[in-house]
Length: 537
Image (cartoon, rainbow, N blue to C red; front, top):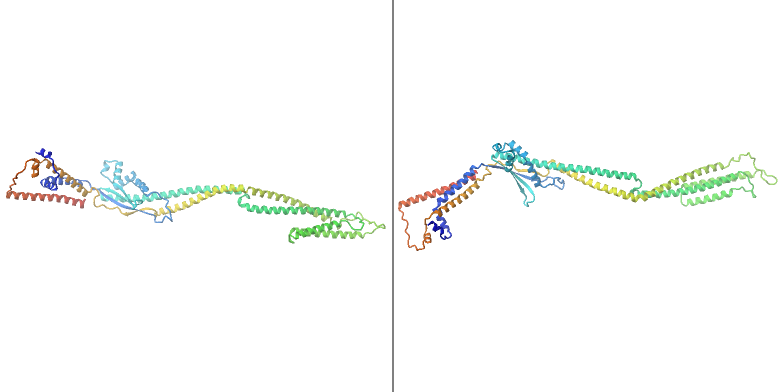
């Protein structure tokens, strides 16, 4: 019959049919439910309790605004945190923590050091906390799991100290390294700048007077020298004219030493003196129209005029004295004796002295004129070389300006880096601060016994449904008129009801009460176990 039932075309079961099956197979469902839940619940309490301690570390920004002190540690915080994490989770650090905290006592007897390190790494968890826009890291959590809640708290506290200390050391080291690097670059820039300054200094020393900045002064000096050259040439010409005048005057005075008789009785030499006086007075009139009375040339001409007038007066006096000499009957003048001192009262020595001084003056002025011409040529050469020197100095100055700009930029960066380093040393830069100290766990973090209770319920339900379904398919009895009609094609005319006595009804009611009581106790046991796992798990 069971094969016939399996082969028949069954319709979809209704909820009423499921409820009938549940009532008929309730113990096939409830007992596996209890056993499945009880097995999982027992396993949850057999597993060791793992306690997890955690702390929240806040990433605080620098206390001094960046517009005043720009940090010189600008790396990505997440990258730096990963680097710090790798350092803290290194084999040496973790073995040190395992030894100091006496962790994994039982495991140390059968596991190697590397295995213990891996075990501890698995027990450590770091969780990042980001801002609302998910772009900035604002904080992070550190968790450590252990069988002992106090040990979990102590290890978490030590890991927290490691993170805070390591972050400060890393930032300070990076800041100091940045400052040292800038100092070394600044020293190299200072050496380069000194070399450029030395080159410019040597260039200026080699080309004193040829520099572009001295162009205006060279032009002024050249103009002054050209004026001085013209003055010297004029003075030389006057000295030469004076030389000619003195030589002619000296020759006239020497010719006057011998008396001569003129047809009209006038001594020779006066016309030349008068002509020279007229020439000197004409020069004086010309100079006074341009210069003052204190000008050296005006004063010198006045001295020459006075000297010439004295000579004229002296010659006139000598001629008058000679005219009084006794004359013969035929009117011929008698010459003075030869041994008479002809030089007595004569201007010849003075003229010779003046002529000597004049010649020395001419020599000196010619020498000075040559020196002035050489200087004028030198300054003209300086002016001609000025464009070349300007280009050379521009090339040197360009390198110097670049070195100076580089030096100033590095100096600015170095000073800013020193401020940032001072900020880091005072722990006023970006740093970690413990917001929540490591907690002392009261309930175990793992296993989650309440969750396992739910898993046990699911396992019990699946197991009960599986057992109930199996029992229903293995049972070949018929429980409804529909099943009979599906099995037999003939029409059912009537059915015989079950005849139950009063005693049997009482027994059935007791059994039903017992069964419902047992079912309630079973469900109560599951609820009580779940509540116990919730409050004590």
